[in-house]
Length: 120
Image (cartoon, rainbow, N blue to C red; front, side):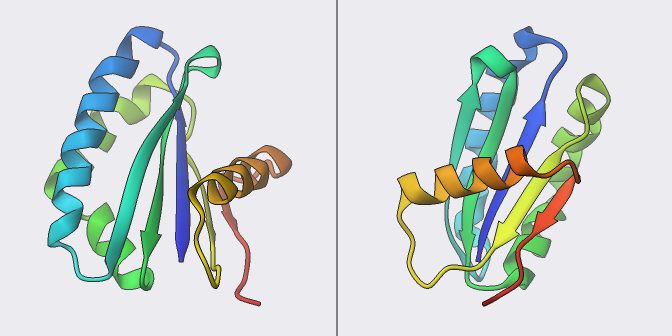
């Protein structure tokens, strides 16, 4: 399973702190069963910071979202930007570039905050 999140801050000065926080969160991923990997991306011209993560199943992603540090970050930055958006889909194989393009396309093509493409 592949998951992409996207956060658009109203204050470009928040991006470095969000980036550092996401790196710390990425380090905690190794402790979660079902986690395969994560990368953080940013689109400075759009004031967006996000992540692309790979999971064995939904349980690992749910556990990650409940990590105390994740909850703390979300409480701090959620009110300072646009609503967080996410996309989730399944793939037989994973290539970083293709997954980034697919996730960004899913978010760009839909207005919903959460986009889920069902398993094929």
